[in-house]
Length: 113
Length: 113
Image 1 (cartoon, helix red, strand yellow):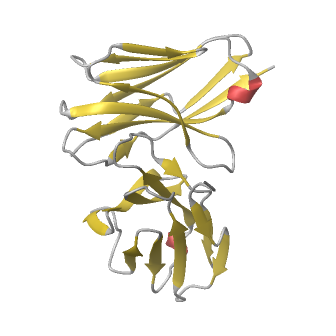
Image 2: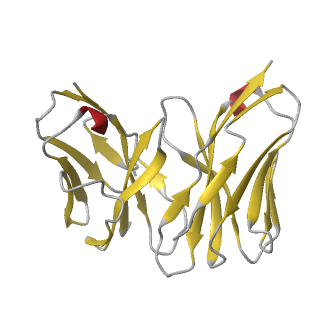
């Protein structure tokens, strides 16, 4: 398996633009997590899904953020409109239901100018 | 909800020395405690974990100890090597049936040759 796949790896955009981050979990994993990492706030859980259903979105900063998981092999995190304070590395991670280890993707480095 | 505190934020040691990173958690219902290592520019990766029914676990040069009464757990790295230099994150998972991890703020370990 190729592991968790994220795209794009780097994104530079201007304030006010819509940003869409994509994630493909490890095949067979039924949990998917979106994290944001910054120097100031560390590693924050934004939202997670189980069997494509959002379980906990309490970490989503505000209505500008939304996440979807239309099927077991794909999820998106959308920011609209983007702001400079959204600049961070966004990680996606997946977990198989019988396991305990969350496998992280390579991350998307987002810069909002 | 769960809160995880991690200390120190930075740790510098000489090659061959031991390093200890400590974490405390707030929710006594937490039952799973992983440690992740993140090298510069890379994704977090699990290095060791411990469940609440175990007091200590060892894997070669790394070990984790858990004190449920005091609600703290520690990572011990012996005979440190320059390649151990990274940011280490502790985390805790509540015994709710779900897989949500709450991460500590990270410890930057620098091992000097």
